Amino acid sequence: MYLCSKIQDIQKDMENKKCLTVKEWANDDKPREKMLLYGKKGLSNTELIAILLRSGLPGKTAVDVAKEILSTADNKLTTLSQLDYSHLAHIKGLGTAKVTTLMAALELGWRMQGEISDSNELILNDSTSIFNYMAPLMVDLDHEEFWVVYMSIRNKVITRQRIAVGGQTETPVDIRIIFRKALENKAVHIALLHNHPSGGLHPSSIDCKLTKQLVEAGNLLQIKVTEHIIIALGATGKADYYSFHDNGLL
Image (tube, rainbow, N blue to C red; front, top):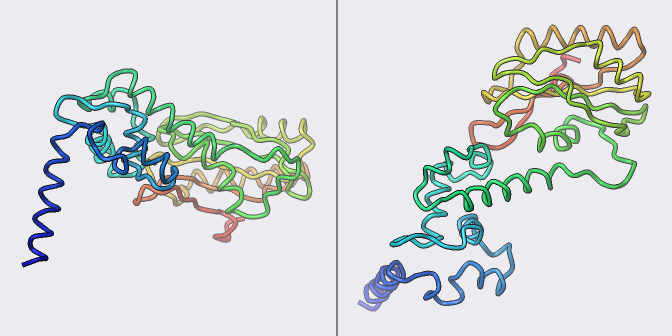
């Protein structure tokens, strides 16, 4: 009987909370106050988004609206970051200010991941380190891009360059541009990368043919193609990659 009574009390409390505005909640339940009490790590994704929104709308708190926003993206922040303005603006309770605030916060998250160390000793020795270095720039694009990382003989990063921008299925790549920039930057090693907006990770016949051409051209110039990586969002919404080197294609 005691357990049933406690469950009923909890259910009643939850129902009462739905009728309250966020300002009327206990401090432990208010997103901003909760952050100050427990730190940013103590908040859920929903609560963090609610802080960005600042307010809800009649009958819905900012937390309720935040839940709806996440539900439209399958509760995945990577998927949410791919939604454009028009998609988000259709969610009830989101005006221009809230949509742009949310989009700006998501973009800052990607840019933070993409920042590199101020050290001049950034060395990319394997596919994972190359992927981690480049994924923030490429994983949430809705079109294909082809990038090259130019490195020294010790695989120390010299620079990275976007070589070409394409459509949703392919990107035209000029081999001459890739190696001209390699010579200009005195690069000895280069890593190739492109993304698949469709989500598929396996290379196409065109991808394989281009890689072979670039390897052959690099051999003539004594510039080694050390890697070719395909980046995409996997079925779970998590960034993933395919490595030509790790799969024995280089």
